[in-house]
Amino acid sequence: MLHTTHVIRGVALAATAAIATLMASQSAMAEEVKVRFSWKLKGEYGFFYLGEQKGLYKEAGVALRLGEGAGSQAALGSLIQGQEDAVILPGIFAISAIQKGMPVKIIALYQPESPIALISHAAKPVTLPKDLEGKTIAHAVGETGTSYLSAFCEINTVDCSKISKVQMDSQSRVPQFLQGQVDVVSVYMTNDLPVLEDKTGQTYPTLDMTAFGLAIPGMAVVASDAGIAERGAALKSFLAANAKAIDMTRSDPVSATGALKAVWQAGPSDAVVQRQIEATSASIHSPSGTPIGWVEEKAVMDALKLIGSVEDIGEPKPASSFFTNELLTQ
Image (cartoon, rainbow, N blue to C red; front, top):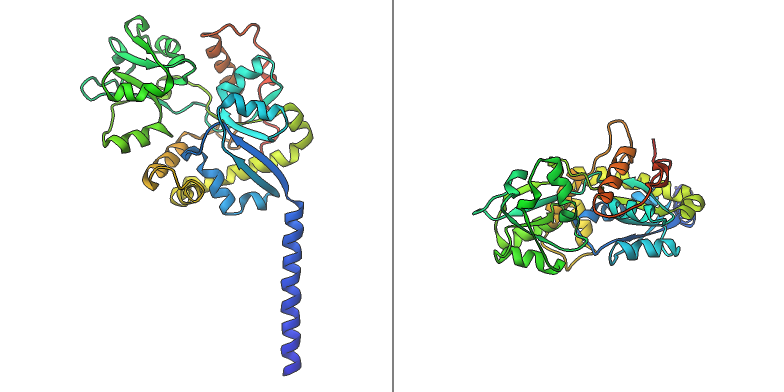
């Protein structure tokens, strides 16, 4: 009996050692993938942290390193310098940079349309495009929501000359709106709107610009041409894990909220973060029958026309310059 106990114990120890060895070898085999966001932590990034907490990246052979950012230009700069393997930023900025000659590509597009809305005051509600006529709207240079207002007007047969754009710095837009200095301000439904409504205790009349035809490519994963050539397998594993993390977040936003708040203690309340995460999940989609992140050529070329409507872009580059779907798991 004693001998049998020793044998069982020996087998158990050997099994434990084998598992430890296997885990160590898997850890050693995991490839580091450094990813930089274009901005500070927010609910949009929740699925990355849930995926990391649940081990989805490790299972894919990826040792993920996530970092906050300080704007799209800085993120793209660090990508080109080889400091990052991928950056997460609005696709419209990547398309503009590529048209100007930057050697990068979109390898996944999670938001074919940026979830931008125009909010207004209850006394002067703007819920349809035509309601914009006769209103004042806050505008900051480079601000996505109002930079393409003329295109939005054209799509919806609105007389843009009847809308007064009041230019100000980006930090002043929302305070000026709250003080009643302007009638309308643009916000991201996945970020600003939940924070603002929680802070003021109000629900604002909302005009969803995407629902009325404004398709500005939003959250995208961008890699350098050199990185795609050299680290394609690791990037493919990263994107596959992202897809699983997005699905998991969609079905369990509460856990995604907890995972993000674990690294973002200074963030807003759990309720606000969960609203951000749920709004993000609602904004992520791809064409039927394609993997999460699939990039449609039409979405990219339409965005290029949009950019060309507000600045001189010269001769448009061919569609193949802007994106690749080769790293997405079919």
